[in-house]
Image 1 (cartoon, rainbow, N blue to C red):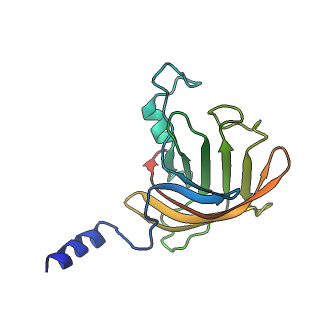
Image 2: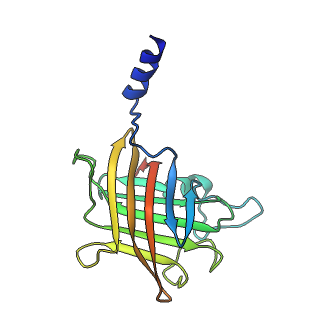
Length: 183
């Protein structure tokens, strides 16, 4: 009887067996498994971010959803202060749609190796990989599998291009992140 009570509580709180098991972003990229769960953070020994951002502001920038703009952006790294790898994933999303899986009309991804150029994402990064899905290009496929209690989860895959020219597939991608609502 106690088991049924616990199960009903979990179901009422939005638990589902089809959600990825961990928070963050995971995928296969360039023959390695990436499990990125950390948000951006400032270094305690005096590193200062351009624009004077705080850890609180970086936390919001790492996972936000704007209902007005109908857009989600998620940034995850394997280490919050001194990362080696990071992924920025952004896509169009309308929570009022209500049907899943939801395929965004446009999406973008950047996979970054921070050992090539520092801790900030930049358009000048030629050793990092990007992919886009929009009316012109279809490098990336994103599917939102659900959105409950401000937690969004889904899957992605694609063929990404680096600024230096080579391409690399990203596959078996999953994300599950609680997002902050912003305007």
